[in-house]
Length: 339
Image (cartoon, rainbow, N blue to C red; front, side):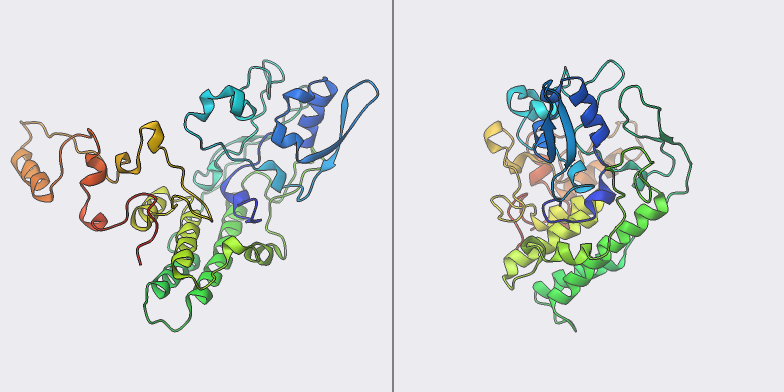
């Protein structure tokens, strides 16, 4: 999302803790080596005569984009300190002292799904604590313009006869999705929306800026090309991004679409088969617990499970192979859309 300048990354995830004043805190302590390498790569700095570093500015695209980093998807990445210490090793790196550890990756933005969460601004050790403790009503969204138009784009690509093309519906959905997330962020008053808290002079607000939607849609990964398989994949991926605040809808979209797809040129799914977890071992339904023999519904429940072909328990790959009715015939995880 950062690579394609998708503003929704700012409304779904929270800035990491490494503002420029935190960076300078480590520089002044002679601890530039404890700043994660990918954060160092995104800044301009000079080296003073005494060997300490001086933060100058963020490299393009600058704030707020340089404050969003995801986590590695490699299997057991947290146990690979030599490779992924920049993300997970807080023994010295990212840890200034016993009271201050600065998280380098971006958390999920909880204030988009909960209305009363306090926020503490990451400040340099010794600086005054800055908090947002205001309680606000919670705002959510359901069956929005974006969602409906994503479905219309999907139907058009699957061969339905509709008044407009898939591209028209898709572009309308993308634009609406960004605007809806921006509106939601404003209503929920999430961190950094409309304010920088007057702390870091290099900080920028996360509000949607003029021209950002057009810039996002200029990227190839966000454009339909006329290749039905690729276009369907893009529609499903965008549906999943739109459902970031609704995990059940995101799960159902992945379930029925087979997206993210293995070996995709757009957003490839990680394959953990070599680690003992092939796609066929990933559940597609909830496990069923055995009813108590004293349950008055015992015989009815057992008969119902048998009629639906559902085993009790969660051993092996039964939660993948034994599917509920709406999942029958859907592609396996990672197989991609069925035309």
